Length: 162
Image (cartoon, rainbow, N blue to C red):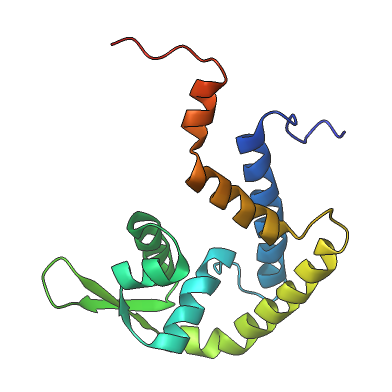
């Protein structure tokens, strides 16, 4: 094993390392095309907005499967990059996300990257014991059935002091 790869038992660190590696590679694809301020995490919200039109941040978060906080942070980054604009929603707390003209100009390259990355991931999946997305969905299903904290307690960790 290489020295810069986390220990097998440090699963959280290993997951972050895999995500950073994959995201870094996709980010380099954009950087090579002069889009240094475009992040891979922008593509899911951008694609949802293309398909569904302007949405409140809460609805956008739900559609891409992240927390409201995570979606809000991503939207703020996208706004700084000139990819989205925010308008007031139905109440003072709600903000509606709209694609900007710049985002619409970038759609051809974003869609091409998405398709190429999907094909590349299928190729990578062929080298793995099981497709990566299948394994990740299986992990989520397993911890939904029985949370990791319960598994830790059952493994013998003493309960916290009361």
